[in-house]
Length: 205
Image: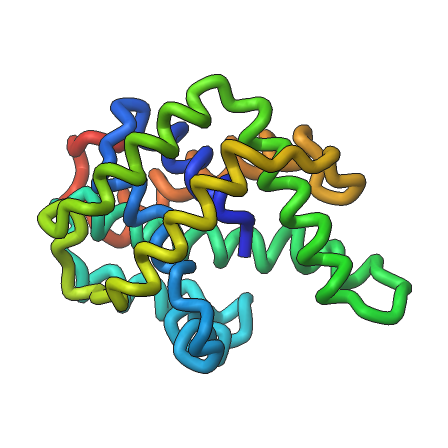
């Protein structure tokens, strides 16, 4: 899956109005971290990456995509689907070291950090989201998340993306992130048009 900041950056590209409820939906599915088995189920990791698309469609049908938060949640998992079948898969195939996952996570953190550093709105946007997340109405959904996990996730990410500065990833460079984001935004619009035609003519289509 992409770094949290990459989810947020892609969400801003898809939804230029910076709708806070939508952007929270884009990032909060990753807040469930302590219960790894639950996180794996939520992220369809019990399904091969290449087989996830119909599961994503079925999941989307359970959401109310007229709600910005729900649309953001679906976009989050769609980005995971594209990333796991693209940059992540390529890195795994090319890796020759002893611990692929440790190296992958290191490079992903760097990619997230440099994306934040390059995004002019970054600090102000994270502060806005830190306030917005306190409003339960902005997170109203059938996709329920533990409140304690939500708050700790936001506190960590506000600090990481506004205070820490990591060097650029040699694997997931700024150019790779830009190319992936462009492709993901275009692909998601096509995905919505194909499987959720009732949204045609909506805010992001």
